[in-house]
Length: 615
Image (cartoon, rainbow, N blue to C red):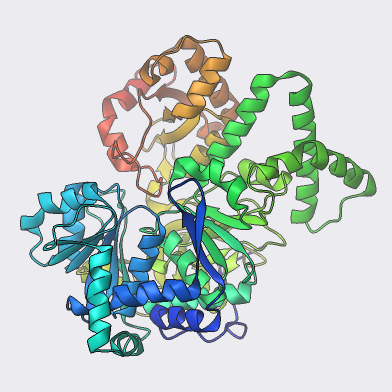
């Protein structure tokens, strides 16, 4: 039995704060001596600051922005990797009454200039000289940009100031106007613009999503009702804060008061987790795919007794996990086996993450059910969530008691989900954006007068009101034989089946059958090739090696055994490079740019339909 609409009651939600600025001020006042943030100290260790210390820093920066003339809802951009200064800058902007324009640090100069110009940003925080250089290069196109504040770059004392310069300005402003920041915070209301996040855009120019303060404060209040995290938790935060997922977690922290270890260096996650020992962490599917692939590859390379023990332990873990998901209690025999499996294998896997993780949160894209079950078997539940930039990264999240793989849970308390007649997911609640910046036409296309937001995703609700997302509406493939294929489902499954895979693009709209372009993960490929005894070579040489192609073929064959006949991949090509943000083929949130890729590799795709036998 299924339903077409699900909602949650509002009774459990505490009254949301008037603004994120007020939420921060209240947090500092409530727990001044509790740990707020910890971050790398530059010497291999970690430095910790209290909420009171964070409040002092943010106050001086906010006063500095006021001294520079920031007015209510003025846009202030931040172009930086995730670091504690990003959070300080963001909170300072909000406490000054301004609105943050989030810019991914990987954004090129042309697109960064477009975002700053379209948003009308008057001031920009730039992480280092590289980020400052982008703005200098396009300065003529940025007439509204009056000043740049750099975290680590060289300041010139005029157009470019350092953080210390801004704090000095703030100290003087507070000396002359002691209540300036308090007055600015008091003037901010729920509908004032808080954040402008530009969608990564799988096609065309990105659109600026206007998120008022109510979006963040509502999600933060709803987190209390969900009862997932508490003030004694420790979060490990590496997600890009330019993405709504990271920003949402910042708001939840202010509401609940737990500490956060902040380090946006992706290559340091594995090293940092055992040192930080967090209790929860969020990430997109790619991080879970990479961890799963690395662990499985390492054990399979060793083979023998250890591999057999590993497989046995995870099979036992899966049976226990499935019982939990189904609401059953494992039998005594299974409990005994699980205790042994946990001591010999599963606990060692958890130790790689610090040994204290209660759960992961996964969002931004679909996660393979196989990979979700693998983590669950290890005693590391992955709670899948669902949202868009247009909803402040909050809409649905799985239940910790029953985190069923493939389901992103029920709507947040006080919000609604509905399935339209054509299967499109519609959302309504306080988290919905107020519109696209300078784009009333685009706003009208997705935001209805009655408050429902058309997501562009296709999904279904089960009898319990839990949502399952199947694909993007515009991405559904209809073969020339009239069969529909959901490409994302196949692509996600393949990355679970094939540890070598980084990305897959399934193609076949209007074609007689489905084919695929496959990109391999450089790290996984290097590990596999070393174990297979292949001579050291570059990526392009390895993907051309017959042994690599045969391994990928084996994975495609395994994938096909799990698909309907009309969905099977009849042919594939391996690209000579990984798809990445740098190549322009994936967004910063790791979604493939389907239209761009299909246009770029049209000849390669066409070549897979030239065989008359297959056709």
